[in-house]
Image (cartoon, rainbow, N blue to C red; front, side, top):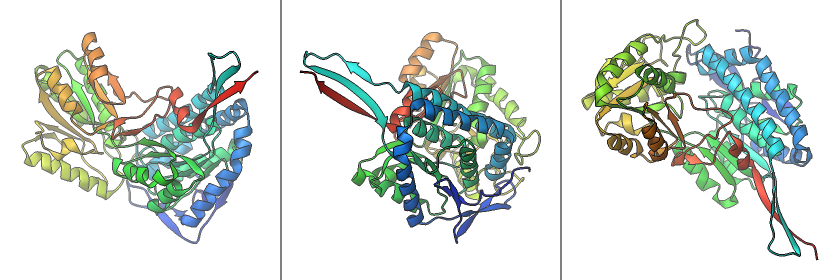
Length: 480
């Protein structure tokens, strides 16, 4: 691997690399080898980083939108220029196949490009006044220091989506990456330095003590926005901890996405869409198809075609040519998937392919298709976060929609049909923040991303993504 790990073991605060007496290891999940040791910051050091971001805020927020946009575009260019290094670093640290890692780096760059332009369109309004002696208008201004807590499954793109919006709005940021994948965030900080992001505007604190970082962000009166991507349970905890400081929360939490295949679906499109929605990143995505409902008339043909496609997937180290399914992030993740599969089989499901840990290593699980998964199976209630497709047969549209909506979360939902009227009905009736019809990869920088119900608050991406980091101020001007 050609990636240079120099400086990536240190936190990045105030435009400088900071080492600490304590550190923690970063392992390659495909091999178990330690690839780096990273600075392990304590609560006091995280608090100091927040102070650094606060000190940088006045100068950064005073810059024009066009000036901030120029910085973000340089950052995007640096990502694209370093795409191969970033991809190889990500695969070594997180495990996903190189093709997916390259796509993620490009995806990350698209957020800097998008929000560079959106910064110039952070419009206020002139409000027609009912009184001749008064003029009404609104201003949109940066909310203040923003904190970000990012996950390990998309370690560059998720941070880019938050940082691009925050900096475009005029906020400064302190980011805490997942302990499993801190190197990707530090690589992004290195590129920020190359792009001449001013010192203190973007900071990365690395720590093995996630609760300490969360408490620092939640309890700080200086941090005015906290953006978190992760589990619903942790999101609820951060929500409670932020009550005392009444800060804005942007929460992208757990999903349990349904995927509906109707009798009139194009079978090739449905199978390809299922593969994309389910097996990307070995199923470790919050929008992964978690429950697949197939109408009775197409069930046999769909399942047969899906099993054929899954059989062609190649499991292995993401750095190897031709690998399409990499490792899960930890052996603990494999144990969870195995528990869910065993429970479904015990309740009467049938394994058509796979169904067990893969002999490739401790972090690998076989690409799996389970048919006839029964109601009450834990597989349908919990996020799988692994390469397992649970298939449930249904008869009517109303039945499928009812089952799809019968959960407490609502991040993404997928449906495959060639009936235009049904597509319109489903786009309105499926309870999710993202609905994809005849498509397995809906995420894009230009559109909002986020959930309803217990899948979170707020939106990332799209023009709406800027709103999470801006306050609207009403101005009333008396003119005599």
